[in-house]
Length: 368
Image 1 (cartoon, one colour):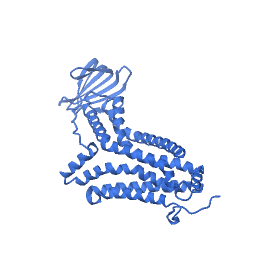
Image 2 (tube, rainbow, N blue to C red):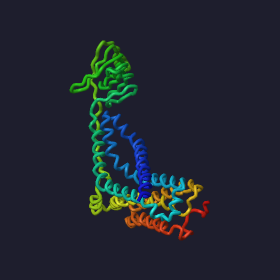
Image 3 (cartoon, rainbow, N blue to C red):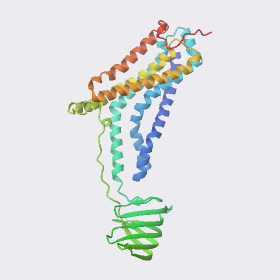
Image 4 (tube, rainbow, N blue to C red):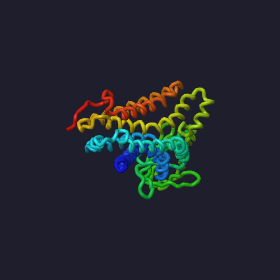
């Protein structure tokens, strides 16, 4: 019991740290899209963190299986490097018993994944898409930026050199083609926006140049001049409902009435179940690689490489089977058969450790 708790505590800590690191990496890589949306639409920092919170369950579906793999690999390689596994095996503790703490963590992770994929993900992902769409469509305020030409509409273009701390505009240029008989250009040293029923730009200390169709120009200097500005109307984008917004039973129900997308709907529904196998699969892969027969430090790098390689291959096959099921539902049973076969094979390998040497991944070596 004390030994199991010792291994469990180390493995659990490493799994949690690995999951946090992976979530952080995913958050950094995925947040650029949200940051761009927030900046372009003038939303606040609060909306950014709400979008990130809604995205968290979908990130955890990726981070938890790989976090279990990383945490188990780190913990058990450390035990092997410190010769603790060799001592435990010499004391008669079987690989199955040594694997129990990690398997318990993997079962806990699988349970969390089941809850996330079936109950939490559909709601949070739906909220994420709704808020994202609202941010895209709700930004009807007049937004200007400095050092960039902005086409306000089909007839007005504006350029502002600088916007100071008091929201005053400096060095303003406007080209106005509202009059079909002339093109009017404004240059002013400073100005500010007046928000009423329409947006009015008050320009001060500037010049108005009007050029008619015959290229004749009229120049007028002014102390103050008001011009109405209006951004072009933006089309309200219609939100497309994605598969992640549906629950397992909703996907099954929709697949009955959708002949064209039936495979995609069924594959997405059953992937909510098969994803829960991944922590157990990844954990048992680590247990077989580390606890299978050879405990020499010499093979640590070899075991790390083999473990990562197997995980990449397994994950690739999982994706291939899921994509194949999109177009041909006869591949659907393989989504369950493939991970279950890996689980059974790993358990057999652990159970038969030291009984059938031909099953060993590593060359035999006597450690003295």
